Image 1 (cartoon, rainbow, N blue to C red):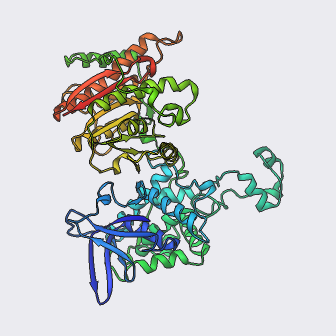
Image 2: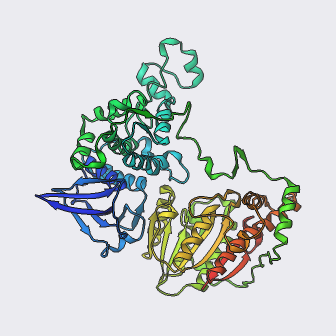
Image 3: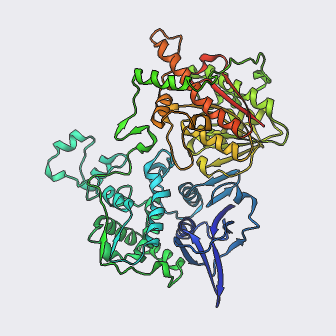
Length: 591
């Protein structure tokens, strides 16, 4: 049984009609569930609507649904089911999984549909990889999970004026659909379509005009030549936009989107369109057509939603942040004027608090399919963090392994601390599946899996751990620990990938914020912190590496000062042996 939790604002029953006001995300998930038809609502998929806990005076970005005849449950704001509190909604619980994030939930429901329906809809794409990459690393997944939903909200908020400007991301989708078709094994498709045999770009170029395949014209759906889950999610959203801006109004400005829309409608003989129409409550004010005389939308000349998200790099204007040694030395002088003790201590633990010989294979690094040359180093890393967690943990504690990957640290802790519950939090589906396989072979019963990004995780816990959480992820982990007054054991990584967003700002502590350091200078130090290399290697620039280690200590000092400001007692030490990884700093916080 899949327990699905969707948020709602208001509910009213009038003359036999059950009307519910919901955010866009709830509408998308429910629309997909109805479209798949299996698992049926109330059968293998149990849908619960939980009311937003904060008061809502008036929503300008929601949609009213007609749930008459739907077998769903409702929970008021003061009586949420416990699993619904663990993650940002929408979320679902399925056996030992808790999933959050729009794309993750839609994939999970679709995969279950594919494995259990007599005639499943084939919308997960080649090898089931549609929207597999998490939103943090894939601009396309982020667009389908976050950006298109925000587009709908912006359109619903638009007022009737003579000129209406459409959201920027609508123009990006229009430009994306103009890009040439890109699919796995493109020449197999060419052969099938043209009844020819070519296997490479060179053969294709030599094949002559008779075999020419229009790569632009055949970009028929969002991800290529066939309809996928991405098309379904985008259609459900854009159908709402078309309520306010009818398709004929958009044709002139967004011809590719309107043609794509028509193809999705026709692909399943209007079934998806019918699902949307049945769900949306008739005659609601926010969905009334606009009467604007003029529409404006900025369509980039050439734009692909498959490219990397450059916001996650340290950028100064259009240039990647680089380090100039005289400038670095000047920045380090500013740090010295803060008169702080910037150093990490050697690891003083003489003995392990556990016996590796008593640990089964699947709880060791060898069980995680690591390359042989990495096993010794990973063993030392796990050993150092596990010792610190064992020293802090008490029976009944909940320990979260953030960015758990294939479960190296969390699974070891689950075996060593059977009276504690271990949450493995990971946003990569494939990595988490490998962790689940290991846990199943070990027979561990104290592991729960969270498949979501760090921001979506809301559950209380006692100890937060992370081993090489990349860049800003370490600061998000620390924020989670601060919010729940949890102890932490963190080994940071990828300092050069720090970037600001929403609530994460740099520097972190008041001491550094009130200093003369500029943001770009702080990020320059973070960049230098990644210039650390194996000191035993004869090719290593030893002086540059020592500077890098010092910059690591500066960034971590800032993090630990923030923790101290929040009442933590902190320790800053190094892993043992120190050459088990260049990123060998360990941050420990207790209350």
